[in-house]
Amino acid sequence: MRCPYCREDDSRVLDSRTADEGAAIRRRRECQSCGRRFTTAETAVLSVTKRSGVSEPFSRAKVINGVRKACQGRPVSDDDLALLAQRVEDAVRATGAAEVPAGEVGVAILGPLRDLDEVAYLRFASVYRSFDSLEDFEAEIALLRTEASLAATDSTSPDPDSTSDFATAKDSASADVDA
Image (cartoon, rainbow, N blue to C red; front, top):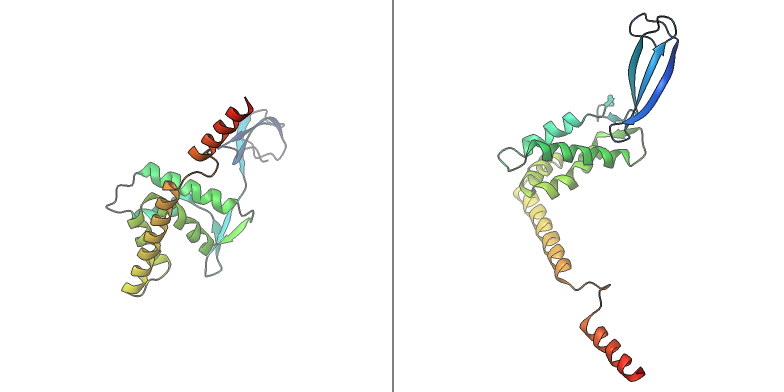
């Protein structure tokens, strides 16, 4: 690593620590030539390949700016957007690829955005998926309603792992017989 003071290439690592929740490594270094100390940060680069073929580093700020337009006028805070961008980056990094197509980033945005705000999700999806007609919106709204009703049904159905009243009564009866 080149010293920022004397530009010499020879430096020694004094200390290494993880930073940014494990996404980066912070190193404290000492220049062997001038003796001055400096800090460096190392991160794994995640690149996004655009449709044009141009590759650029992943940017949470770009995710936030794109989603912010869809969230205009909605009760979504900057903290919510920052958390969404973190979830998107985590999902994209979880693929294990160092370079991902921009389309995968868009897909990774859809899920967390739907959880955050359905209206903002519809706005974003309409642009991202190029909705051409009212039928496209109606189909997406129908899908959202179906998923919501399924989720409501799942939350009201009994937990298969819990003991039912019948099982408890049966166990009590068998205990009485054994005694």
